Image (cartoon, rainbow, N blue to C red; front, side, top):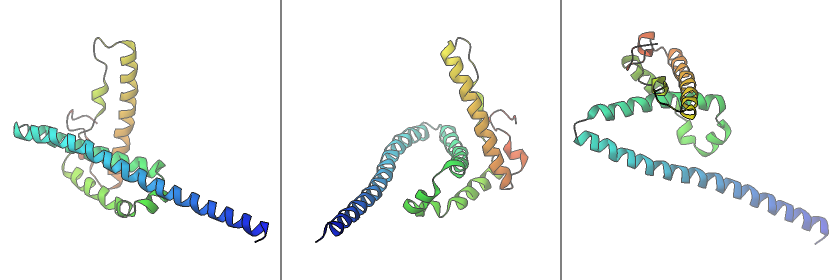
Length: 171
């Protein structure tokens, strides 16, 4: 075997091995993330079940309401900066129905006003300087997040009355 053939074979083998390793790494990373998320989801579910047992259904409802708003925001984030190529390749079962998921959440929001609001980050008497700055940043980010959620819902035909924060009735 001449040197060029041996070098070509070695490079081809290296390229195939590298591509296989990258593919395996991405798949394992996604699988690992999914496993870890389910562990956290299990712990949250335990808290929600405890709330149900104590007849504090409003806690469970509030969490689901927030999850809808966060899901809408994550969709906007994905549209802006998500890696669509990798998502389509590695998660086609998820990406194939993203718009359908958003339609389900928007349909719910047509009848049930937004719950998420930036009020959680308003300053509190006694905050130290670091906490005050953290709250200011959190408030600013929350206002932007709420704006993006409303923009998405408007584009899906949700009326303005449903875009009013349910907890404060402010826009």
